[in-house]
Image (cartoon, rainbow, N blue to C red):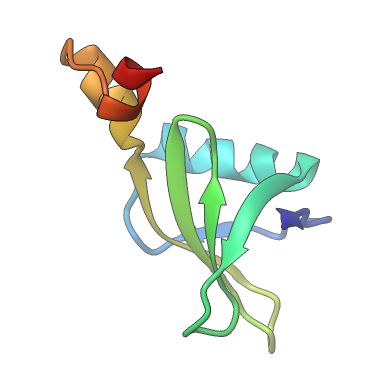
Length: 91
């Protein structure tokens, strides 16, 4: 699904993610970004940010947007280390 948030008040960085990475999330959400809702937690989403994956919560009550965590995608880390993921090698 594409997640697009208009008028993002402020992204609360609860996961203490570096400011540069957290700042990208705001732009992604404003333009619309691929996201997967968490089947077990209402209002939680895993957002595909290209080089990073973001785990966010949008409160259904207050509308607050909270950044819980962000991590670098595995394929990018492996490429930087000189490794190639098996799926890419086989292609």
